[in-house]
Length: 122
Image 1 (cartoon, rainbow, N blue to C red):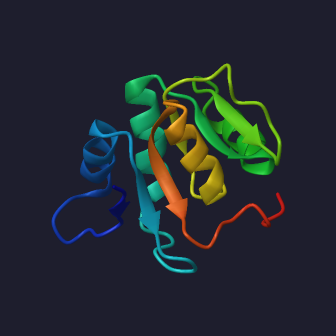
Image 2: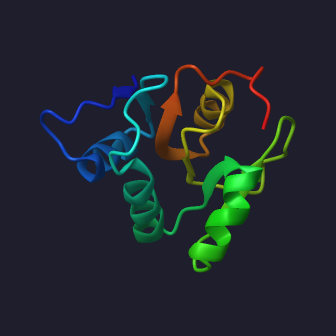
């Protein structure tokens, strides 16, 4: 079961906590739900849970400069993620990658843009 980003009954932070209880992702609508505070909430959640954040390479480099106390993993197609656990996914990660992390028991939670599939280039 995955969660949809619906803020009618919970804040983004509360939704992340709820999704993490079952190690599920939160679905974000493609091209929508931008600028509502997902990234700051995700970073706060990662910090609180001492979890690495998986995002694309460009954003990982950017975030590392702003938040040097956190681990940001720059993903590209074929990157080996076997050394990590309790990964928090940024919505820039392909859906298939989040599904694989979930299957392998390495996913804590995060956002997945349903429009992001492996054909997406980073």
